[in-house]
Image (cartoon, rainbow, N blue to C red; front, side, top):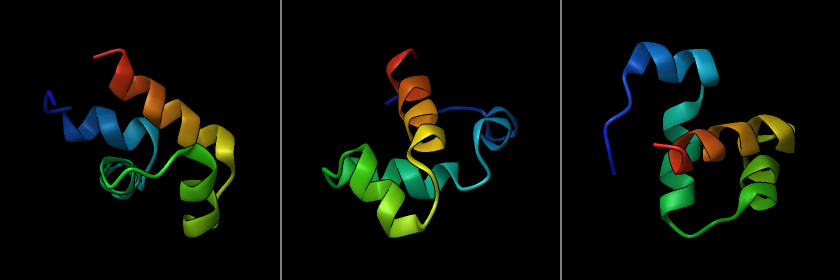
Length: 53
């Protein structure tokens, strides 16, 4: 995976690194959102930012 600049990543979401690491373990958007206790839309925004790299 391409490295994402941390400043840009923090702008997408403050817990960007956590979301990416959970996703790499094979979790989808909703389980990640449930685990971190945040909405699923911000999670999907982060996952889409990875896909578009």
